[in-house]
Length: 104
Image (tube, rainbow, N blue to C red):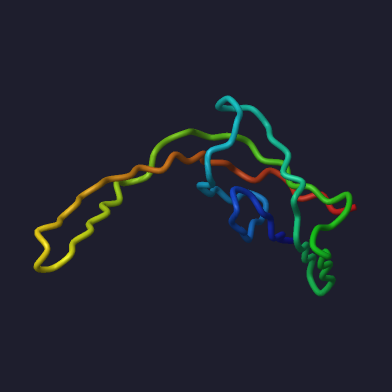
């Protein structure tokens, strides 16, 4: 059984026991969160697709850790104009582990 969820403006395919890094969520390490933006649930040959969300479906997950991704360097340059700009960015993330998928 797997589901497609939406969090942080992105979509993820998840199954029970999966660990994934998503955009930063509010919650302490070890706490349980419920994601109710479920776009699709598949259980074998039975597939349920929402329009756009499935009413009553949810995914329970546990917060494993918080952290920051590797640095991404942004470099801008205009040739022959004596313009160069370098900037770095590190995005915050929350690592979660999927506990169960509950369809309606």
